[in-house]
Length: 44
Image (cartoon, rainbow, N blue to C red; front, side, top):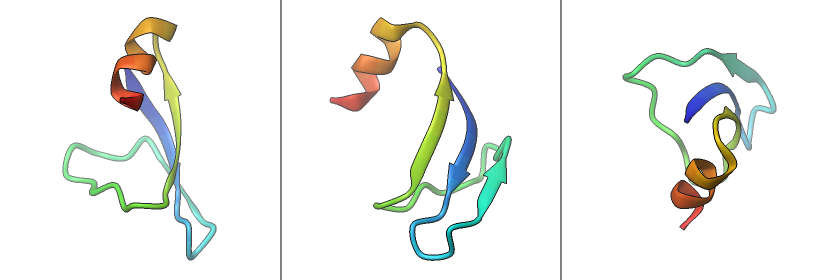
């Protein structure tokens, strides 16, 4: 699974191709790419 972009909940701004040091915040929206079964695993 790869994170293509993250949209900040408060700012509404997108960060495209965030690096390994990027910290996901609680209400961020993620745009991901991967197999459906792999995406389901990280949803849990």
